Image 1 (cartoon, rainbow, N blue to C red):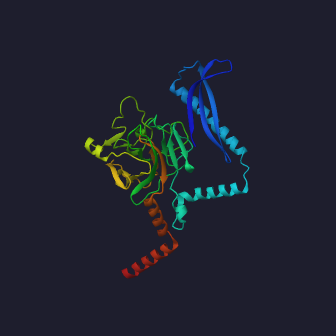
Image 2: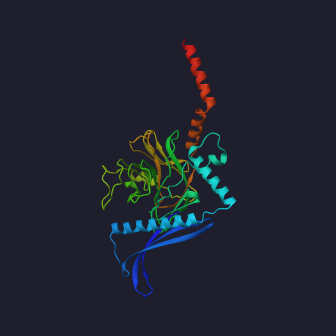
Length: 344
């Protein structure tokens, strides 16, 4: 899943050049994959400049048209055979089961990550695959950013606080730096203001990574960055001193395992292959009653990541399910009765 936008000159039938905005998207019709293209004219001539807000408006109109065409085509091709119906039924069952793991789940189902990537609206250079579990940055050697992704549901609490795990699938040798990862209390939604200009400007977020630094923003709305760095009262930042940063920095490789942990005490940590690389006290303890969504900026060295099951979250979920089981409740009731009799 993903859309791409290009602004370029095209020649019409009369050989006159016009500048058009083209949006490309993928459409799957049963087992066939098709590329959809929606175009909007920007003006006559090969070099037409369009104001940013106007171009955003045109892009949104193209996106709505593309989504409408995709929906109409998929509805028209929804005459499924028995095998496809069974496959879809199983997929829907797993989707419903996925966010509610219990101690009785099979080993295969229990290894499904607690969430996938939010796919209703993607950033300009982001492509999702592998059932929404892998995020890849297009043109990774030309652009260092443009692939900010969120979890499609709140991250479950673990015994540490909040955590998720990624496997690095691809890297770029043209850029250097960790990915920016963390959590936000903003629920992702399909609207034009979903993504900030920079990841660290994300509203209600706590992030760690890039060049050995961390950031936090408390306000719900994104900070609109200009030519200067955001002030500390808007986006609070922390960074390691140069000698420690040089020691902590490592070149990432495909196959590396990255874990982000946000502790109940308010520390945000970056783990690499079971070794802690970054650990910052951001002074913002986890609020258990709030919902937090995972944030991954697939940037700099990292070009592609895949979500993995998080052992801590699974252990906590299994522990909670066992505590809530009827057998455990009966045992608790008997224990309370014995305590009362002993007290008399």
